[in-house]
Amino acid sequence: MFSLRSLEVFYWAGRLRSFSKAAEKLNTTQPTISQRIGAMEELVGEPLFDRMAKPIALTRVGRTLFGHAELLLRQVVAMERDLELNRHLHCRIRLGVSETIVQTWLSRFLEQASRRFPNIDFDMTVDVTPSMLVALQNGEIDIALMLGPAVLEGFTCVKLKDYPLRFYAIPGLVTGEPLTYQKAPTVPILTYPRNTYPFDYLRELIFEKSGQPPRIFANSSISTIEKLALDGIGVALVAEGTLGAAKDGNILQPVPSEIDLPPLRFYAFYPLGFGSEMLEELAAIAQRVASEDSHAQ
Image (cartoon, rainbow, N blue to C red; front, side):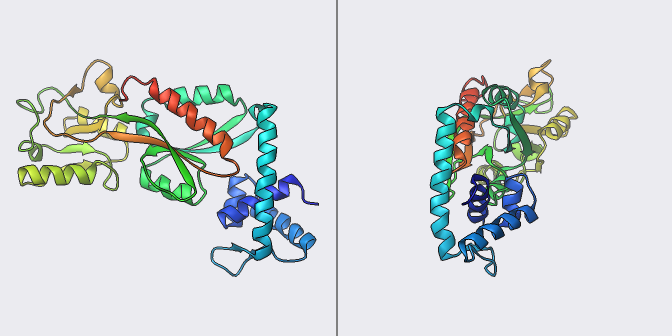
């Protein structure tokens, strides 16, 4: 008879279509995964995986077992939830998060999540949304707090909050008010990387309205954007509430502007299916914490 651990190993190897990714997910080694799968195949008497496929794929027998394994594992999770055993489980959650959230309410989220699940260990990755989308689909992170929405097969997303984009600069850098479309190309704009919103949108909008391409200095680090803005290199364009110098001592001042930009819209993304129960609770905690943030819309 298969143990629950072996069924869990088999489930994740089948879902992620990779022994190495299953090992990363379950915090174990690839040889351990291979050994357990081999023992299961010996018991069944047939291969469960087509190892010649790239990536590996379940065989006919493997697909049959996969359905039963998911059903059994879901029943175990339901029992643990009803008995509140999941609250005390020790597990690791690989969390992807946008830096805007790091600079606003991530600490409060971790505090409340740890209160609900005292034995969770978080492995955190701070990255841009396109990279986290790939990591989610590859099974490299479990839940991501990032820009959305997006349609991903096998995943769901929960709306968190919108953050308005604001221009900030040291006093005197932008002469006259407001920052107009005609004036925007004359001063560097310090904002998020090229492969993220609002880079392309901002560039096309200013070019369309002014007839001139803007000078955009892109950077993935909000602290770097803030440092450059403090040094007078340009005007920072970031989510409201993310610059410490704009909150403490008013060193960086909001710059009125006629440039109208949609807000940054943040969502919690996580996979559907077995293993999503705790992730669903974490997404709800993130939603609650985000709603309490004064800078979000």
